[in-house]
Length: 169
Image (cartoon, rainbow, N blue to C red; front, side):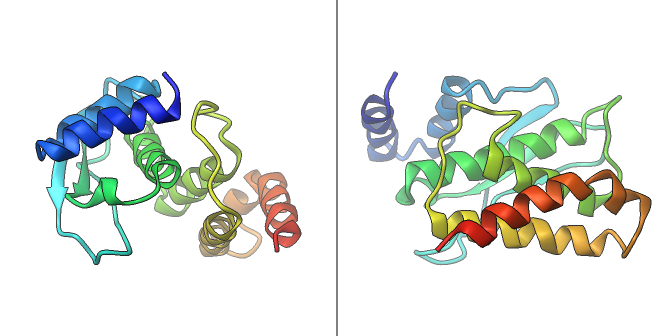
């Protein structure tokens, strides 16, 4: 299915106020499912021009991804990247593969939004959003602790992110 067809499906879901069904359709269409996914729920909308999604649940337990009702008022590439970010958190919090450190989880998720190594089917976002996501990744990298073992683990990815963000207009 191409982007045009996906947008037509999403428009039909939106027309019938089936936002959760639309989100389910996207994770199925883009192969984002995971056994630790506990479904979607609604969270408060921030504003007409910003959105926040979260993966909620105890580490090692199913995660519910909370989405705003206005999720599909935004650019589809951005929405897909935001959902993929949360679906990576679903995996990171799954039994047997829990990543305890929040900074590490966020660094990995923001890196994924830039390079799509885990979810190669997710489209790229605008340079503006790449720069934003890159800066967020670097912020979480800094929070890992100067010279820490965790920073050392991700030093090559950090350099890759810096090269990307510095090359953007």
